[in-house]
Image: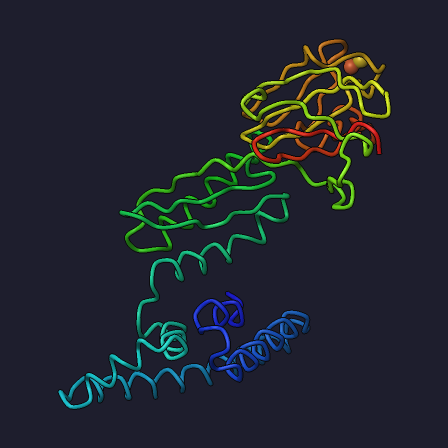
Length: 302
Ligand code: FES
């Protein structure tokens, strides 16, 4: 079930109806506790919940019908439906249809646990002319079979669960570094002394390619690096395979399944994390990377 508190946050203006948000959180907490009950207790609790909801729904349907039937009260009904909290309540009881964005986010909330259990995620950007535009993250962009399955899951959920949505378009992600400790990503007043070296403009690290460079830090240390661009996600590594430290600049990058294969003995890596898929536990040495003012910076000395 969609978290009611999330919907309350997204529909009620901030600062408005704080009590409602508290109540919604209380419902969500109770729902989470419900999930931890033994099957029989859960079945009883769910029956109580369903019957109370049915009573509320019947009462709300009566109210809406009576207000709608009379010219004098219809306008008040329409004003009430415009109230975000009332709209949420009526849409939760399926008395009014939620707007497509709310409905699409609700549908995605249903599939998100499945995506996250495979290391992926999805963000809805907008809905326009029957097309839902989304950004996919993590494993949704990764290994071929699972990424296709996850994309199909998102597409199926949106086209089947949101009336009027007939297509899903995946937007490219902005160029961004992969996850690395925040502290390591700060550029101070003297980037060179901190080991940061400017690699060059982002246009120099094209999508689907491995860019290699020899970088000399302000401290004098020289490091050979590669930068991998998988669907605009940039990751920098020391140019050494985890097997025998041979260079990876002629490695094979397969964007369709997000893998990087060493040309020497075929060790295969997850291109955005450096995790070795051939020898679990082996790992490429990832270097902090920032995109700043259109330039790619790599920290070669920590
Ligand atoms: S050096 Fe890369 S697989 Fe051997």
